[in-house]
Amino acid sequence: MNRLSKLVVFDLDGTLLDSLPDITSALNHALAEHGLAALSHELIRQYIGNGSRVLIDRALQNMGQAGDMTESIYASFARHYEMAMDQRSVLYPRVPEVLDALRDAQWQLACVTNKPSRFTEPLLAAFDLLEKFNVVLSGDSLPQRKPDPQPLRRAAQQCATALERAVIVGDSANDLRAANDAPMASIAVSYGYAQGADLSVYRPLAIVDSMAEIPEIASAYLN
Image (cartoon, rainbow, N blue to C red; front, side, top):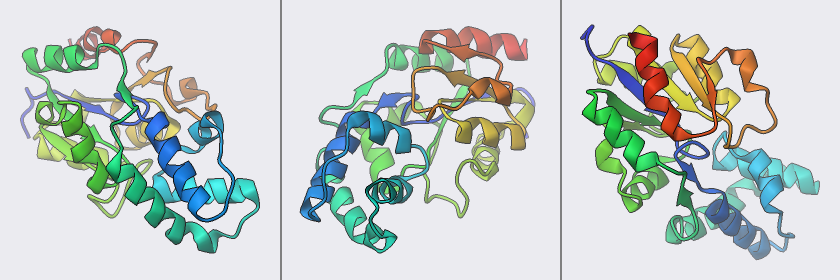
């Protein structure tokens, strides 16, 4: 383990990328194909964070529908999302500049998301982010996914970085719970898909309104 190495781990949806518009579009297309009504952006926002199947299960529960439709709707959702995952999604402000600044300051970067790998790397590539990361782990890269801490531990291991020299940036309780259990320091962003959770209870280093605040906070943590 390189004791001089330092690492920032980023969540994807709700942290680097506002992916809600394309997720909403794909899910509502899938629901329509199964004769079900569309859901609002704000309702779908509350369901994001635990992977697409959990998103669909929550949508079906909201409609009073049986969960045995999940796999069929997921197949439709995945088809629509794969065709148009970067059409209306947008990076949050300053994301490329902040990643570049961290790399210039000799931070290693990882992206750890619960999103399936069939979507993760193509989506990062579509926004010219893929090559900025030393490690990318998706929701199906390991048997565990966040809030289990193992993906964070694996990212640190692959970057040869001690956990005490790593920080995760995320928007949800899943990210911060995983950080606390790893254990790893965390920074929460205020603008993502927190599902109404009070992120302060997980004791992050800070809760920030802008990605631009990350380099200073991360550097102060290790200096």
